[in-house]
Amino acid sequence: MNDSSSKGQDRIALVTGGGSGVGRAIAKALGAAGYRVVISGRRPDVLEKAAAELGEETGAEFLAVPADVGDPAAVKALFDTISATYGRLDLLVNNAGINVPIVPMEELSFQHWNAIVAANLTGAFLCTQQAFRLMKSQTPRGGRIINNGSVSATAPRPNTAPYTATKHAITGLTKSTALDGRNFDIACGQIDIGNASSDMTTTIAAGAMQANGTLAAEPTIDAAHVADAVVYMASLPLSANVLTMTVMATRMPFVGRG
Image (cartoon, rainbow, N blue to C red; front, side, top):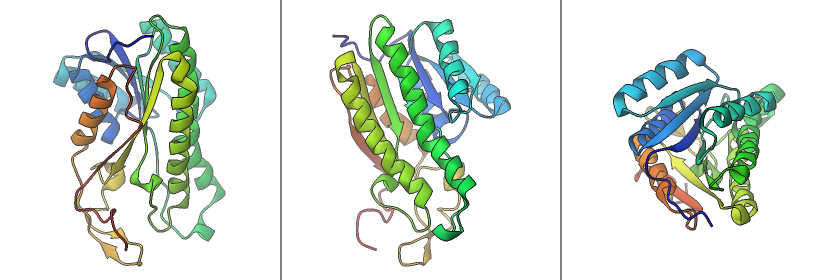
């Protein structure tokens, strides 16, 4: 069994949605921990800028590979590039995701539903599928997959059915991946994030819809705290796994009845 930890040089990580927000923070922390980091996303200019800046900030190697994780051909090309460049993958962080306009369920368009399912769920599955193929065949065998969940995987916000549904589904994908990867030295865990500062959470500090229909400002945390947690999860030997971890703003109205 490959029981080496994911610390040290020559470890290869892929962070989807790694050009901005939480993904960028995770990529930076992994680079600082000694990984060579591939960052992917849909905007080549954002990725290239992030890779250059992160390389300067950490002294690590960053490779920008544009890809739409909801497109099977693009995901295959992404992993083909990783295989051709590095010959292996030690860590996949399924971080890419989007939200859609917060509207009553009956007003949500089919196009918006499909878009969020493709980015948040199908993309994580496609990347996991390709990671399995590479991790099973590489030497030494195995690796780790960390899925970006959400506290929405436990409790939804009002009018967020598509986002909430995908995050509940990520929990199922995490557990299935952990089970199916067990015999191949592939570990899988999930980090559920509550109110980390990013482009997707800019409105929370000003006022977020509560379960009773009122708006209330909520505290946020620096995305670096989430990144530190990911580095810890990744540092474990493949014989150990954090199946689920919640990192959240202490005073956010999550634990309690509204």
